[in-house]
Length: 392
Image 1: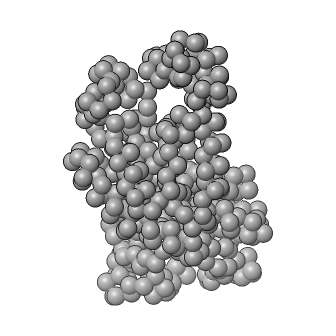
Image 2 (image 1 turned 30 degrees about the vertical axis):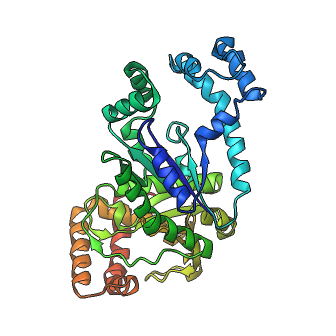
Image 3 (image 1 turned 180 degrees about the vertical axis):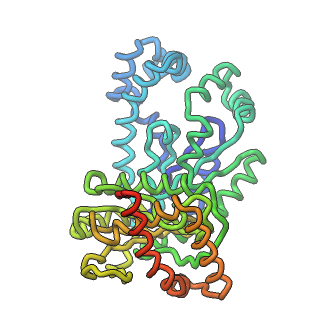
């Protein structure tokens, strides 16, 4: 099962994407629909709202007067928090019931208006944000939903900012060209990324992506941060630490477009306990790996567990290593050494470019060609650590 978190500011066009995904076979769990269900007459949700905001939020027939509630609940931050504290738990409970009833190979689209505000993004293997500029959204809310301009801008101001949304977005869909263009973008996303991702997850295999050396991308750090938060949600207290490692963790260094993440654990037995959770998060297990690096330590200390992303749109390697093991320590040391020493970074970059130019295109051949340099780099990095007092 692949769970997608879908959100966007009010008036951005999220419903168009949601309905497109539904027509293509996705199962939509709509937060707006559920939020209406849980405050129908006779529900505990409506009773709690009346207790908090007064009977003035009711229509003569006893149903919820939504404009009246909005006028009160969005008037200040405390009132908004009260509203969310009442409605969110009820919506969450109903959402779980609907997901549990879906087939195991389903693609679930969780349409959540306040996904960013409620900090739910790390719960999803893929987060899709639909965006339009504020003036466009205000015009839509006035034309299609009867808002006044003041009310529309107040609702927008009460939601997450564009910057907040960009930080959690795995996919960013701009909606400035109308519904037809947005529908086409959603269809391309579905067929090009969502369907392959779901198939890989169902089969328990990673995406088949053979990346190429590319110029350093300043967004790698933000992309890695999303992955770290996702993995932290899975691992919780069982992880000693989770770090962005490898070449994409070194600012300004060209690299294969693969995010490498190291999850430090107390033991490999704990790693084995995380297999199902990591799969649900989008990272199927590949195998147990024994790392072979020139050193004088017992090779048994270099065992690790290895997972990789099923998402073809974001190649990711997840290395699960034991706290204090040589492999765990060297992954952190190498990142910090290359970052701290520009001359080393330039030397490593020249090696990368030279190896790529020689036609070592596959991941295995690329790594093998760099191995002699790494044998010496291991010794040099530890000499640097001793000289600087480095600690992981």
